[in-house]
Length: 134
Image (cartoon, rainbow, N blue to C red; front, side, top):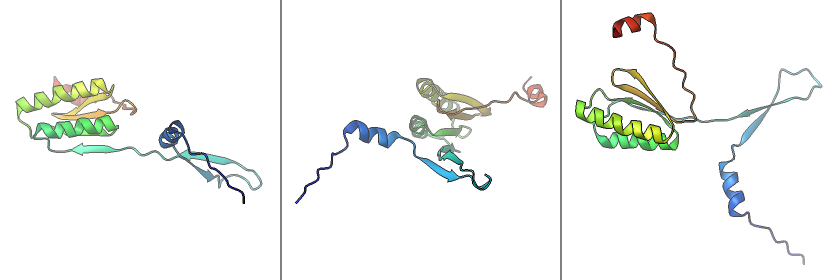
């Protein structure tokens, strides 16, 4: 009677397998017959959280937690009073700075907070928008 002993994966190998991105492989259907080519597409999930009505500081803390998780946040602070709005903006600017994220103003009291891993392309404003601000 033969006994087989399986080695249990160590902590390091379990952690690396947990954080490793699984890649899916698809066959290239456009390739000519007889040619063997393989395309590798990685499935990547990205979360965006839109917070339409922030009226309490706890909503800002929830947005900060989402940013720490790597989720993009779009915040609408128009419903908050002026004092709370400034407090929330200061707090989230600090969180964004600590996370090396991106902070962009999209409109009056509407902001975008993106994690450092996101690429945010900000187009220059149109001449009409610049004229309205002057």
